[in-house]
Length: 80
Image 1 (cartoon, helix red, strand yellow):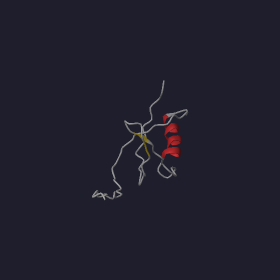
Image 2: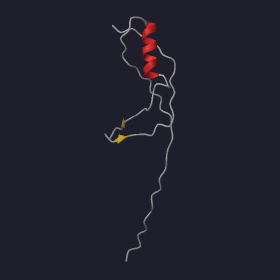
Image 3: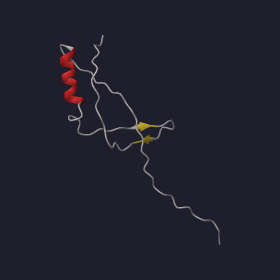
Image 4: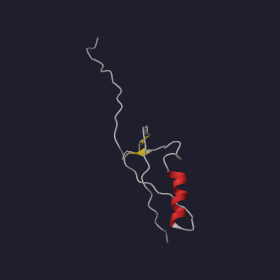
C-alpha cells in the first residue's frame, strides 16, 4: 500500500481589466460622417457581444469571459 496523498484541485475565477484600444476602417466623405458610421458599429448600444481570444507565449489559446465593456469617445484619423 502506498501512503501517497492526493491533493484535490479547486476551481478559481480570476478577474482583471485588460484595456484594448480598437479601430475599424470606415469609408466616408468627412470626419463627421466617419464618426457617425463608426458610432453605428462601435457604440455600446450597437454591440451585442464582444469575443476575445488570447494566445499566450506557449501558444495556448485562452478565451476569457468578458463581464462588461465600455465604449469611449471616437477619434477619427484620415488614412493615406
